[in-house]
Length: 459
Image 1 (cartoon, rainbow, N blue to C red):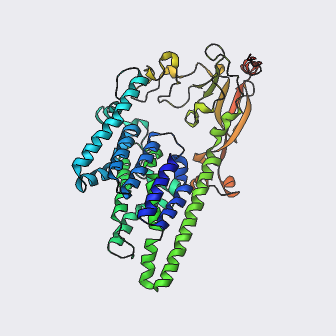
Image 2: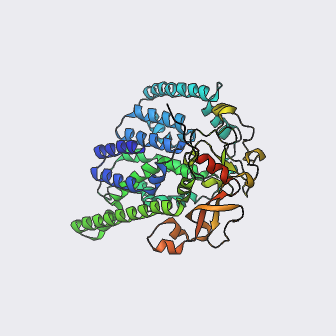
Image 3: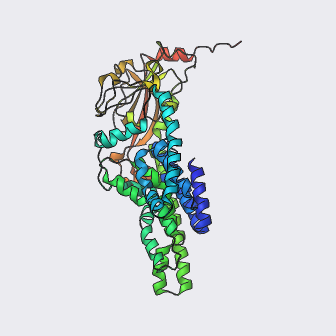
């Protein structure tokens, strides 16, 4: 879906703005480490990123009804909070277009998106409810406090943006200045108000999420493709350098220097982006690789009685990627008490109603509940832990190490070397720890016996 939405935006830019800007956008979006993480995530912010990208393309195509449609789908089916990002489009359509036409289209699209949503809420929650209203009621009117889940400084998104977008971040942020220079014919390029409008959600959204005390990198996903486009517009051709060179140099020489500056900047962006993506995989990919070392359990093993295989996590619970990484239905992730004192997730339990269940262990205050913890580490078949390279090995009397994967310990590594991967040099300058998979010596035998059972013969 991400590739499809970006292709639609690429075509609109190529047709209505500039082929060179479209090609630069394609290069930046395909190599961006921000897109590398956002496009592969299954999150409401990622889904809304798709719809905002499509809405921006529709805005460039002057297909305003589709703008309304994509906005409705992104807000109602995706992430209601991200409605702020669509506000510039809504204001434009109400002030410049035909308000009655767009309002009537909006009502039709609203009904068309709400009706299936309410039907699916009824199907999966087992009662008539409206999840979108519940979300808004809690977060806007119900006293919900996102600060319970962490507070960051106002520079958080600048730091994360530089990590994931490198030079694209300042290039995207200065685009309004570039548009202003175009308006006054300083750069000699055509004034494109439609492009400025299409990119305006960037600045509205970044201002909105910066004002919130609780900040997460995934909040920026919504505007990542548009930021790639804004950076591409500044870069190809490089408006600012062209404007500066023309003041002191002959036009032909200024044009050549501008193109050279564009090529150098593009190469630097691509190199930094690939280095960052490689760092994410090499430095922090241990949890994605570690769970592959768990032994396969036959699918016919009864996981509802005594054959449950418990994989326990403590302080490392937040690195757990997904239940898809467990080898079979007999495995269960279990939490053991550690330094974390907040609320923990619960496993899906069909016997308790599945998606219709309302577990008593969950609350809206981010408070831990004792029933979310596993009995004791002695009841764990496997344990996942973080082991410093300089620390003593795990208790060899109770556990044996069956796999370990290297992981950069961020608190002990310089920021530049852990953020980017440079062959040979990065390995020398970061502090490595090990993500370790331990097997219980006392409970291992029963698991291995189950894995060695002969498969039933199908007649």
